[in-house]
Image (cartoon, rainbow, N blue to C red):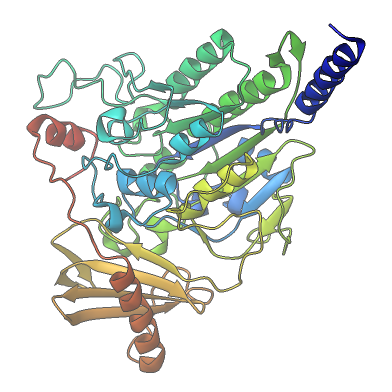
Length: 471
């Protein structure tokens, strides 16, 4: 080999090595992310939102270091549709998921699938049948824990009247049981990938467990049912404390290549819907979209160094100095998936309709609501039949029950002056009612309802009834 040729080969090898060094450097993975949904949790029964009974001490602590969204709505007052909307960032009506037992279509892109594609490990631990993998909520999760047993069931070992099924106690589980499953799984986990985990608690859901009242102080006027409901909230809050602390410890001590590294952690806590508790003549949920049924807590927390973004507009909730930062702009559960994807550094899915909560938010953003498929409901003492939809905009909520093309009843409330929605303004403000009716009609046209899979499985129907649902 000539000297010139050898020199040329050596130069070429050096250039090749130089080219390899210039390959794009893979960006570091995003933070560990924990999403917690607490079933049937009214925002106005959380002490973090100013409720006088101390029901959510840990949520309040978390709020001091995070951002609390003062006006957050679920799109409907039913568990499965609201969770489907959260994970797909789409309206339940567009997916054909309007009641429990209807599966999420396999073609819907869910948040866990997006996180998995972005390099995240994914795991879920749920506490009730309606959000189990049986109905499509396992899409995108590497590990999905919906293995209920009699020991952890919310009903304990009590006999359910009229039911001889040995599986009757295996339909849900208490927060402490779900938290224990999560803790045990975290201890065994050995995966360098960032983690996206979903925890679902069902404790505030009926039946509240009156024989297990926790030690709280209530005003004398509060009845036993409300005390039981509040006790279940505190039980869920204790479960929340357990899982968040375990998650943060795991995130801070996670090892990668033998070296300990803390990439940071994010926690988002919310609920799928509220509870009637006697307001508007309804004890439970599903049939109405009044505030007690659809106003939910929503809180975002990030460890130091994680930018939660946005302009903070206040520092109090209902006159109490509980939250560190409060944002008062209207938000919905559809905003959860884009927000968590953004914090993970993952490009949002084109199908997502929600906004990133860490960005700029308009002061008046229209919020749309729809109840599940009930045949009738009572309005001002009379039966009203037909689909119910609503819109929150311009400081008001407009509700319409429609039969065919003709509106048969409408309601209008000014939420700031009338948070209990007791003074119907539809007759005195016909112009505003008409404008909001058009806004609602445009939404219905843009997102037409899709007929979902009917719930016909007798065992599923029986199980849902045992859990307090009436489909």
